View 1 (cartoon, rainbow, N blue to C red):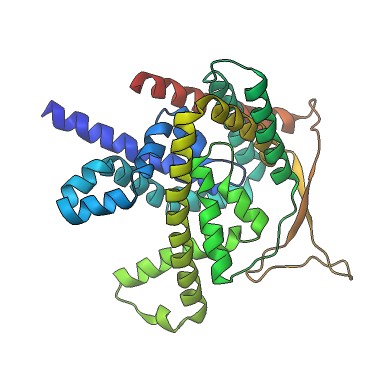
View 2 (view 1 turned 180 degrees about the horizontal axis):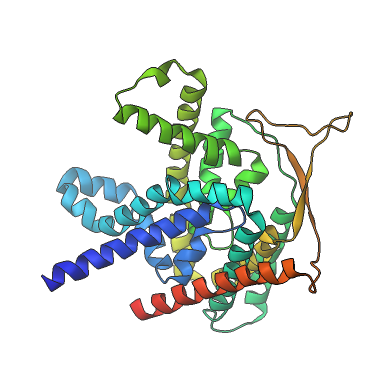
Length: 337
């Protein structure tokens, strides 16, 4: 009985970790990989995903599902990604609302989480030398280039959406590199992580009610088609990135950690709470909107807050909250190692 309770508790906690990863992946500038890294299951995630290969397919055909399940660490992956899926249709929807109405507070929490993550990942590195410093600067440079890049316009071409799917999972596999922010730069964040997810959600509700009228809705069907292509790209990206990262973690762990630290440091500016959006305007100085009615962002104008203002200290409280969340995650992860 106690063993069953312990097993259920572990499974439930793993689902919660997946929910946390899914929520982090949804926020532009935040990487779900950071949650995995700080909570202590990053390497297990990468090595488990790396097992999804031709050998696994051979095992499935010759030995059956049980051997395939054991070889790929199926229980871990299924429960974790169940949490990610749950997050996309629950926590992520709440986050969409919070970001829209309380953006500075949400960014403050995640800014604190990134700072704390940077601190804990830093101490994973055994020593600094010329090589690790070079790779740190490389990661930092890439992070800064991504931060300073201007968002592109929305593009629903299927090949481009497939590419977006491959790119978007980088945040799950590589701490510090935000897949959702890359989607924002590619112009398809709202299309693929808001509109498409909402289309799936409402379609599932319709199916439960045996309502098939959505089939006549051209806009809904287009979004569902984009969701399928995006999902296929995400699966391909997961397999590709996990195989690459499992190799470099085994062969070049220290320089990989140094690069990750650089990525995280470079990504800090992306979620700096004190910034304003500058929108694309036409010749008549009117704001331009994309196909779903959202204003098109040209760039972000960052500014330093007034430390004497009450707003500064109010946002600072949310930053401290983010620091505390990651500190608790890290302590729990260390205990479970």
